[in-house]
Length: 137
Image (tube, rainbow, N blue to C red; front, side, top):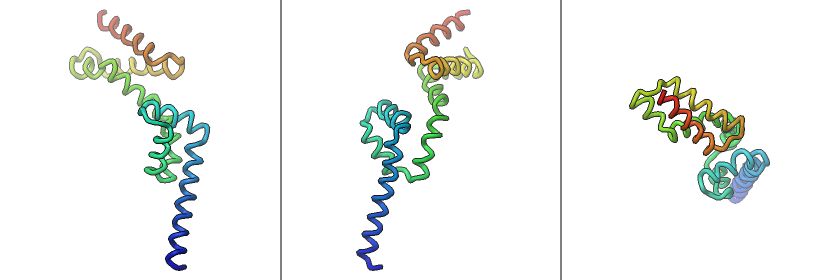
């Protein structure tokens, strides 16, 4: 094989790899579960997110994202709830809640969102009211 043939072969391999990656990110489940929600969350276009994923991830990493994404939903949501309710202050700084109490609060709110389809805003407001009532007892 001469140098030109190697370059052509390499270009073809790169194009094939890009096509394979595009098939993954353009699939219905990927679009609904990852691309649309993450692009909104990151405030970027769906096309930009697709391009980032295709350029930055190899095939095995790309194929592993979907299961990791599904399993990380509750964990990430709990971190967001922790920050929005300032549970770290109430638990770690002021010692008004134990770590177990804080985790129970986060779990309850996360499950309302994930299982009962309550909006994040509504679940957080209800959670804040319940937390305040608990602290005032």
